[in-house]
Amino acid sequence: MAEPHIAQRSPYVVELAPGDYWWCACGRSRRQPFCDGSHKETEFKPVKFAMGEAQKMWLCGCKRSKKMPFCDGSHKTLPSELTS
Image (cartoon, rainbow, N blue to C red; front, side, top):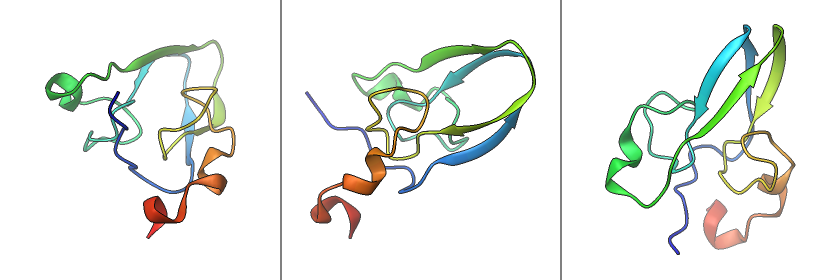
């Protein structure tokens, strides 16, 4: 299985309104952290999530979170060859 592109080595802090969102899982979107359809050339699929109320969220930028689309701190443990 291919590894997603690391879009950012830290979370995206975003203010989200209630509604549905599609988080980019491939790391190729130009609208990070949200999907723009760039995954169509990859094996990755965006992750749909919904917000019931407006709030600030930390969305994964390294694309390695075990709690996708939310940051779980995985960016802190990326191997050095992926962070240089």
